[in-house]
Image 1: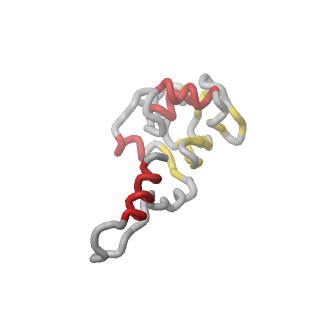
Image 2: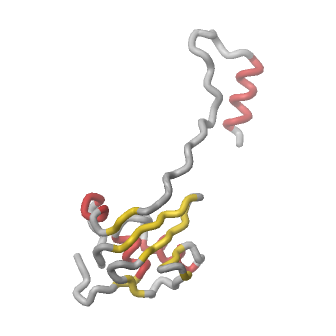
Image 3: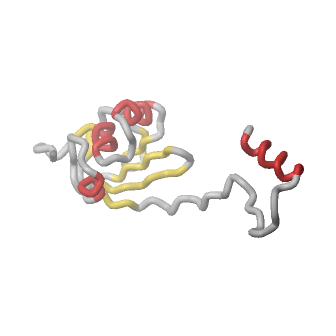
Length: 122
């Protein structure tokens, strides 16, 4: 559902295009300073217009999107992807949590099992 006047609250917009899971998380991100609109920190009620750049910091990475359509209701993922241009840097490469053993080396030794247990207890 698009807005007739061409604006909506920034917290509602980032929730409706599925950048965050809930409206509460969207408001908390704005209040915590994790959302920037055109380079400045914003409160949840700041209006968003077509052409604005929204930066959202979450989970150790920054999402940079440009608004192409203003929404007021949450929509499906396919429709949400059409409402912004994603200019985010690529996510960092994920490191495996456990060491990979060579295939065919047999059962893990006692030392290997202890290393696995240390990783699990982190």
